[in-house]
Image (tube, rainbow over all chains, first blue to last red; front, side, top):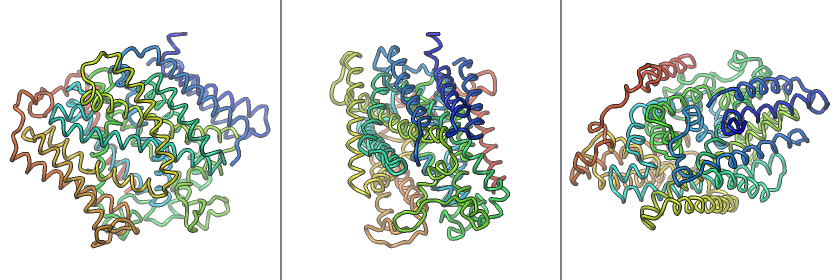
Length: 57
Length: 553
């Protein structure tokens, strides 16, 4: 895990996963964020984040 | 534009990550080379994305969207004419000298190839330019946040500068480069939904073409005469001024971008860095030019029902700089709005960090170590490098307030930078490919080229600018004037460098090995697989670029 943290791709992946969680959870629980564009962007960022987490530098 | 909790949360997460990157990199910093030049250890995909990100600061992003709205699709010339060819040339022909000479900076290469006075001239002008560029980035960020979010100007300056200071002080160049890559993805992923939604709203590319004047949707068709197109230049001025002088002058000599290729693991990766970077660069107009064209299309009578318009400035004209922020405000709801704003903040901060790290490398290596304190321990130069980072940030803050106090200082500085940068490529071209070029020739050529730029600007006038000596010749656009100034300064440098070199003594061949094309062993074919070689890759990119120009002719 410690080795992974030193990889830029892992850090970028985690960042986008967190941002996507904010968008997706917000879409589900808050009317202020309940817009389809947030849902689609959140899903896109989640997929990108997972790919980056598993990418080797 | 009002942000909600989710938007603030995304901005906060970004700040947290950039600072965390600084702490992660800090453990690897053991020497001045680690701090100032990443010890030539960065993987190719990172150097390539950092290479393009170094030129993807918010001024570029906001500026290109604004140009897209003002000049239409002709703005793609800044990519397909003004970048790709130079990036391929840098990778194939110039990186072997920059990387192979083991120079730690571009000014250091100049000292090896020419002499100390040429190095000093380049190092000092570069250091001054980077500090001012960094400050202007900071000022522009604070101004933008003050205008669109009504945040406090001073608070924005100090918080942004503070965050950049923390991660560049901790991790030096590597930290800045890593954050540039994060910024690249943030811009691409943060602005892609905007392009898709706005394009859909405008009825697709076909509908945009149907609603806009044809000059705004054809890249070359109306470039036969300057007065026929909104850019105000003809194809000859464009190809020579932008495509050759300005483009090669920037991409092939500016240490800020070349530094990203110089930190690659080996020669092959250093050569491929600008070439791999050219791939996203080629398609970047989709993210930064297309939104501008969509914005102006949405203001046409047939699409006015969409309710979008570019904000007005004080004089009642369209404030093109606000095109991107206004599109974000129009299309992004809470949540994605936070992503869009974070992308803008990231690009400003990254632009600032890039300038500060280039400044500390040049100042430490090429000014402090070369002229003030030689032969000290590596630890000494590491400490100085860190100290210079702090000083660079403080100077940037000072410059940002200077920019806030004097309305025209940005324009003035950009003008001075163009005077200095315009002729620079002639010095490198002659230095790398003509072994007879001397240090005196390079030095005087640079000075005469810069003087020629100033005189050309002083004798021409465009959109009320220039003509400060005597407005002898009127040019229809400021852009055209910039191309002509660059062209004259390049020619003046090229000719004067040759003349002075012919009358002065060149260095012996032994001193020029590895620095000049004719005296350097060719390394282009080291990789066995063709797709790992700079030459074939570059050729493919050039063919695709030509194809894109034909498609959007």
